[in-house]
Length: 285
Length: 236
Ligand SMILES: Nc1ncnc2c1ncn2[C@@H]1O[C@H](COP(=O)(O)OP(=O)(O)O)[C@@H](O)[C@H]1O
Ligand SMILES: [Mg+2]
Image (cartoon, rainbow over all chains, first blue to last red):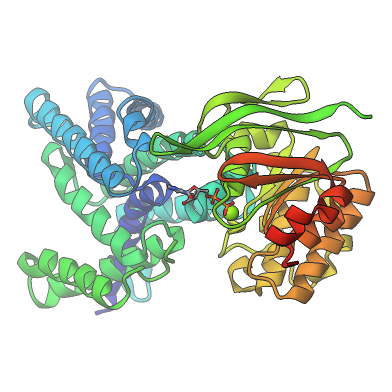
């Protein structure tokens, strides 16, 4: 049981990091990025291609993250401009449809060009005993990445001037503008950051299981579930929800069967919406 | 007479293609307090939002000193030195009082002197420094909204009905804080339904009705004007 829960936490930290990117972009401008998982896969495939070309991991990883960050930046500066001109429901719908389109295009391109490409990162080292369970080193390093990224985000949002400005736009966009904060700049920066975070998730996950070209949709769905359960717009909520769902997922896979895990995760999200519409740590604007 | 700090010329603005404001012209000189008075629906909020870049204008222009503001975004106008306190406050509800204040100074990092100034004006805010803005009383939220606006060291403070939701006592207190700021030399433009309060603060006033300036003059003259007394001060 301990082993299953620890595995759940390893998975959960990655899920949390995955959900954070989605939740931030939604909280800032109402765009539900349905290409978030595809961003992760795209980053992974860039890294995998570079590894194939015999670059070292230390070169491939930064290049992959920069590439996916640039893709995010470019999409925000082009496709998202008309979206942010709209208000309310229209903005949500157009944003969601455009990003669904982007996700489909990324999926199609990757499956067409690199159908059998995949990213696995093998970390050599003996398993480490934790609470009497021997944990594989890959999972631990992956969790470490997610933890460090989570802590860095926490510090950024709590203590940096730009991080606080970001939260202010999420809480009250008009109030933020009156303080001299340009919401468009904040949204663009965070959209690119969110894409980089997606790439980071792919790297962390690739240390326990391969990231394949067709894996994007599943990651997007997971990100969506985590963001909903955590409360759209809440960073700490996303991590809390990630860990909760990670544990729920490994425990149900172990005791019931993995075929039913997705349904249990979706049910958890549905139950959250019914009983806590604003998520674990979310707040209604 | 000091030179004009804010010059609004024949400004028109509205909603969904229909003008609510028609060709409003007003000016505020440096160091002056000016009131825009009018009843509910007269267009006061529309006028202030158009000046501050929160609402697109359809005609006319706004100048701040030599700078043309027309067409600039609200954040640029804020950075140019106009701080707007909307009637709904627009605070950041789940951030502390101190975080709200420090965002008022965005993107400046050195805020100590200004923070002390705000805490001196509103000691209540210092006591509540760590509390979330959303959990404070209406009067405290009003102080925080004004305090946040002051953090940017504005050259012009614009307030929309600062007495909204306040008891008569708190409303009077809010105006005495504004009077202190005015005595310190801050330039103020305030829109208000509570005409006696506004005219007690202001040097000059404009009467806005149906989106047009109907009358303007020294505050004392307006306060004595039979039409103004009848329409806005409950004198029959
Ligand atoms: N968001 C809006 N959409 C459409 N009409 C509006 C809106 N806000 C105000 N109005 C209309 O504009 C006119 C002036 O309103 P407002 O500027 O709020 O007046 P005041 O602040 O003096 O009470 C009113 O007739 C009001 O109905
Ligand atoms: Mg109004």
